[in-house]
Image 1: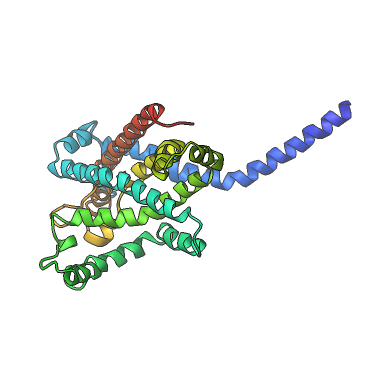
Image 2 (image 1 turned 60 degrees about the horizontal axis):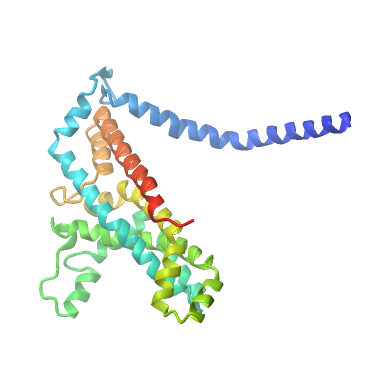
Length: 299
């Protein structure tokens, strides 16, 4: 009995040792590129540093300067505006596509692949594609609008009024692939017995959707909202590739603001302070979503 216990313990030690060596590369990368970088940015936010001269401590000066910076307030508004529209639209479009692709139609696997492609395509490539689509003179979208009889279509990316809606449209299209897959997985986990029982009671398709599909999908919906909110607050590539934050900072977002201050103006302390403000905003929004989900999510 004692010998058997000793053999089992040795096997466990071997498994722990193997697990340690398998996890070690990921742990080192996580420490170097996440924990150390995360901690260093927090320390740097209290310093003034241009990457060349010796950093000097400035306390909360970077944070105070941020609060008094009109450009930071503008990029904060732009980011909130982008998030407020992108999150619900991405969830709605993803749900509608998932409902369509959950039906028994011919070639459904091909349709699912096609709609999922934006989620796995390089965001840089997607941004370049949509830059052409939104081109005011030669773009696909304005050509279609002209054919439909719109005499003065928007100049999209060169317009302070339409540049941000253009980025939102492009981002909703990009997000819809992932949200579609999540909603589709949620729909396929709904028990058919619920629909059969509702059909016996004479429920219409709309009532089945309203009283069965939507309530059962609330955990998936909650997950989609949290993920897309975090993703939307970090919007960057679209602003960099398609508009470079313009025109007149109409599409300048917090992450693009951090990029500019850190790697164009070499104000690393100021950029780090902005990064921590963004982290705090995302943390608070996620916390609020976690608190509110108790009122509407059904597990």
